[in-house]
Every structure is written in structure tokens, then in C-alpha cells.
Image (cartoon, rainbow, N blue to C red):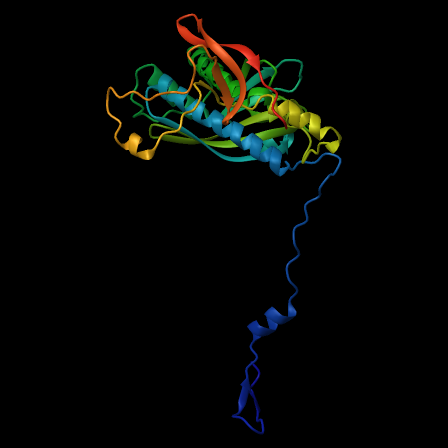
Length: 319
């Protein structure tokens, strides 16, 4: 270690500078290089914010539906929570899964790639045990399903697929059906290695059992329904679009007698049995108004068991 150097200023106390090996190391060593991730603009793997939010809402709806369905079928409180929605190639997705797991492959009409619902086999066996009358006290091993177990898991997954279709609505318009169950992600071959998948991660909490699961959908089946990012509409036909939209805006229509003016004193002294004189002639049609503006006149009619107003004439109101 170097000896401290004593520097004496003219107008102040002595200044002592101490240089240690650690100081030298921090000063002389370069900063560690940052990790650079290669991005292929021809095959973007990042979801636009608008697309990501729309998919998050759909997957959150599915999580609630799936949790309710598991609660009913397994007969114990179940909760499914969404954590993340991202886009990966199928190869990256398969590599992120455990060596042994349950992968439910689902056919998508007119597409070669398949959707996937993935969860641990031990969790599925615990669900099956409860469906068969067990109490879940014995830990379930991670193994392949027997024929009976697979049949019960298939029933659960068919209900889950209905929940998935309901949750996505128009984002997933094609029919979705159960195909098979695979136990090794590397051999499942649900899609080509370079195919993009929309992947959502979940926490499955069924009774005392907690596990992680995923749902993967081929991006080509979902993204076209999301539309372009930040779409713009030409202002040329704005007036026509506004007229079309206004035609569907609900408005309140009132049918009644001509209004009459009374003093507040008469209103304050109103009692049951009092009569209020009206200015409306007996044979005069009723007035049809929107927001206080008279647009037509009508007579009393009947529509089934309900009263109705039958228009007898209309009025043109200046714009």
C-alpha cells in the first residue's frame, strides 16, 4: 500500500488523499460489457402494447373461467392467476418447459400448428385423485397417465377449451378441439421450431397444491384478429361515419300531455285526491318529445298487454 501523501493548502487544513488497491481496481477496470440481444425485424417477437393488453384481458378472463371450472370438477377451491403474456418461437417455448410435463395438444381448424395447455403431471394426478374421492393428502408422483386418468384429464381439458374459446371470442374464431397428451416437450412437435407462439404463464392453485402452467397459441391464429398497431381512419368519410354511429345511440322518448304551469304554493299543498287542471283538450293527441323537443303527436294504442303510442303526425324541427 502506498503511503498517504500530505497536501497542504494555503488557506485550509491539510488534505489527505488515501489510495488503496480497491480504489485502483474500480477506477482502472472497464465496466462489464452489456448483453446484446439480436432482434430480427423480419420476424418480430415483441407484442405491441395494444396487442399485449388485449391478449392479457383474454387470458385473465380464461384464468377466471378455468379456476371456476376446476373448483366445480375437483370439488376444492381452485384459483388460476395470469402472470405474463409474451411471444416466443416454439423452440424457445419447448426449451423452457420441464423435461417431463403434461402437454395437451389442441387442433385448430385449417392450421397445422396446434395450441398447447401445459401443466405438471403431478398436479393433474392430484386433480384426478380428488375427482375420484381422494382428499389430496398423498403427494402425487410425476408420471404418465393411465387410460382412466387420461380420460378424466381429457374431460377437464375439453371444458377448459370451451372456456378458452369463450374468453377469446372473436380473437380465436376457429374451432378448437382436444387432440392428444404428450409428456416431453422436445418430442411433442406441436409446431415448427421457428413458428411464433403467444405464450401465457399461470399459477394453478388447487387446494393445497400449487403449480405453474402455460397456454401457448400459434401467433398466426390470433394476431390477424388484433389488427394493425395504432390504426388510423381516413377523415374523408368522417361525417358519414358519425351519422351511422348516431343512428345507434339510444335516446329517451316521452309521450305525454301538454305541460301546465302552476305556482309552487299549489305544489307544496298537494294532497291525495287533489285535481290539477290541464290545458290539454280531451281529443287532442299526445305529444311525443325527445329531450323536451316535440317531434310528433300520437294517440293511445295497445301492443299486446301494454299501452302504446300510435303516431298520427310528425313535426319538422330546424337543425
